[in-house]
Length: 150
Image (cartoon, rainbow, N blue to C red; front, side, top):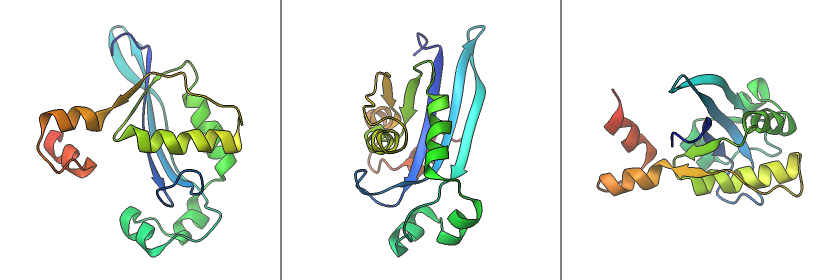
């Protein structure tokens, strides 16, 4: 990992499981850059994003995000996409928990709102894969956080 000048850690909340027909409704991201041999935070982005249809009761239950929250505090999809793309400048290592889920949404997100021909060139790291190698089931994110919380 030390070969990467920048690392982008991120997580999404979505309106469902299918990236080709669902949307990202929250982004949390931290951009790290190697400076003097250590990674330091140089930028971050944390925002709710307005959805184009009401959220299902199940998504509200899972994410604790409501339609009112999105309407009151959310930004437009296009703006969120541009802000995330700014964090991706310099081809950082992309890091997420169960990254394939987030990457599939990111792929459609960028293709919808910024570049219809977008393809990934970034290296990726799936934190869940590492966690699964070291710990017994269940492998949920909240389990990993509880395990490593200092």
